[in-house]
Image 1 (cartoon, protein in one colour):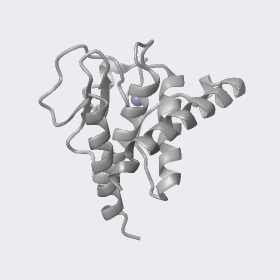
Image 2: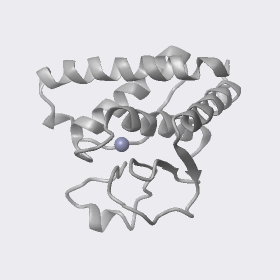
Image 3: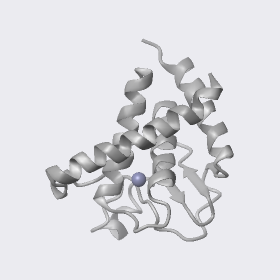
Length: 160
Ligand SMILES: [Zn+2]
């Protein structure tokens, strides 16, 4: 099945909504300054320094500057997923603490819910360690993620 037209539509609505949230979305490598280290997706924290040179940093949400940065090499499907993922961080994790497995799991859970709502595959490629998460935390993640997913779905519904 060709998902591209729907992905483009979802992506467009997400971009419009990000603007309404007062977030600037940059797709490209022009922005790597500012306060780095808020969300290093696809990057293990423990060996970040060695891996950051080898693996792309796919997306980042900079709360203070209100910037969402997306790697330009991300294909349409991943780009849409990254937008959802970073918007989830913007909604749920503003003010930190930053870059925990819980936060990554929450942002990815939001991706899964949006994916389900539109029946399109969304995989941001974000990394987190699932072993670090307890069953009690899992239900908390699900609750918070579903609230954020609802917020996103309502927020972008004007775009359809
Ligand atoms: Zn993330």
